[in-house]
Length: 101
Image 1 (cartoon, helix red, strand yellow):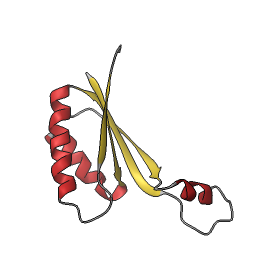
Image 2: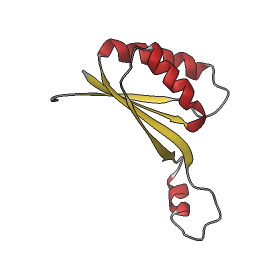
Image 3: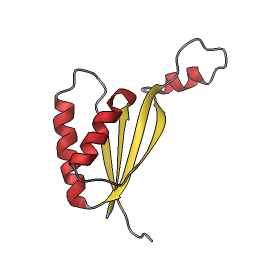
Image 4: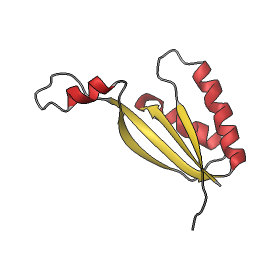
């Protein structure tokens, strides 16, 4: 069992859900997050009087699942990213799980 984490801009949330389903990952969690592209944007948004918009609305998905499902998900994400017309690819990482209950 491993932990897979996927981030995507909010516009791709439904697409990521479809990718999880195609990869046979039925159990997962998600959370809304703000994505930042540089340190300076974080500093600007910490100013109460800043007129600039904060981070990009994004989503974080994570699941404890089997390696074969993760391999399938990564293949699907790779194809998805190759067909993007934006500068915001879906990103994913895998973390090994040493112990779990």
